[in-house]
Length: 241
Image (tube, rainbow, N blue to C red; front, top):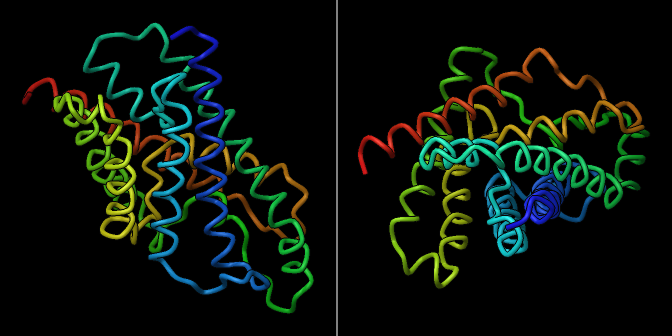
């Protein structure tokens, strides 16, 4: 894979991931959406399908990491660090692009939301927030949930048939759904620094009326937690497998 392919693949794949993921949250929470109040299960599957579409699209170009925590875990496992910066840069750019595309898709709903008597907060469409704000507990949740993502991804690589058949990406998509359903309640399961930071930056910049705060006081947790989880996954994999 060339450097250009890696960067482009991660931009495209991560943009698709965020378009689907932020899009399903917008569909569920914005008042004038046809999917209003569809619920957490719909959100979990929407994010899973975002992983499915994004990773399959990016795989021929970059392998479809779409997540700095995954890239970090793989680098610790393999010892190959030369392209880590390309992966992470592509993921951040793609996350911003995907958030902008989501805003464009739901532009009329964002405008209508701001004009209503009880406007819905918009940050949750783009970035995560804890159900109970407890920094230590929130950080631990993100670390554990990310290990629950990255360690299985590394282990899937030991099954040769999964990679050859392309089934591994499908399994990872269902893994993300499972994490959302089982571990997503406390923090909204960022499990991906680019997935949270890129859209949070986009939320801060976009001209969304009555958008509220971008909550930068919390923003470090969905970045640091998943990076620690990704690093731990690489270390555990090297020690155990």
